[in-house]
Length: 254
Length: 254
Image (cartoon, rainbow over the protein chains, first blue to last red):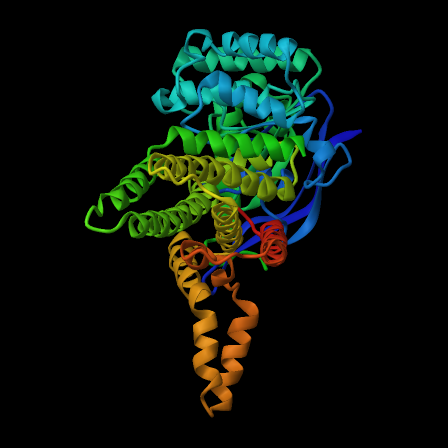
């Protein structure tokens, strides 16, 4: 059974008098326990899709469900952990304080939760920086605390938008290893990224977005076979070039 | 309610760790303190001066803190994009607005208590401890400040920070002048101006209702019934402002 599902999800932004398609008729399902990667160039609709799933944006048309519940459901959000692209956090709080604050929103507190805060800080390599204000954190440290914040409620579903942006190669590898461990614990992970190698190494299935359109979705091996590509990079380029050739800019389908 | 309280405490903590409000508070102390240096006045006139200046200072600097606090509480959250992460947590948008309002209330209460303590200390130093009339005037000032912050917060959910800043100060001034404006237009023959004055008088909160300080300074007693009715009047406006804020914030895309 699909744990995340969208049906014809569409978002059209109004920019002055212009209409800009953020996401166009996206339909996909994510099964429980899998790592699903959303790939696409900048501005392809990846982040719009995640924001629609989480109720930050409202769809122009179509539907989205997580665990069968709509995006504005508080009950659904109890089961979800989210890492935004370029995490923005309260700079006046320390790493431990931000985790405590988010924890309280999930109804978590007390000695057991304090232990979890320490464990999470250690897990993301910020054990010694937990008391430091976030305004003193580097970009990589912010990404790490963002990941810890996404894990604070031990969520069933993790939605991670570019989780390795700003991390050094070791940090990237640690994050990838962590994702694999989380999957082994039974968590479902929706991962948005434009790092192909990252997606190739951890994802069970992928979706390629371009110019707001979901071009294709399926298992990596299946798609590589279907498109007669050599690897993910080749698949990615072929898919996008094929779409661009069929739909030149300014002649998008209605 | 726990979630709104967590957001309130976070808003309060943010204000405590920023310097802006302290500066306003220090300036207010200086102005209140300066009122005692009118040595050429008789003792009675000096006391009147201290009361008058202190009431006005607490009200004016309180209004500055209410407006800037409310602007910061909402706009900063949106501009710094911390709201992206917050709204993916299991909270409703109502929790967010109510939490922000309670947090603002705590910030204003702290500043107000400190300013009042300084004022009362000054009165005790002058061997004229405050009576119940002073308490009534201070109570209504605080109620006015809560009303100002609720309106600024409400406007922040649907307008830009710059517009809100201008609007809130404009409303603060108009709100203190509506009674005078009505008195003037009532003496005019122009039906249009009279009608306009009636509309403004009905919609715009009459902040002058809360200003009993002039009476208290000259020793005129104000009934508890008047205090209660004025607080109820303010409460109705506050509830409307918060409901408007919730309504617009629920429709707002971030």
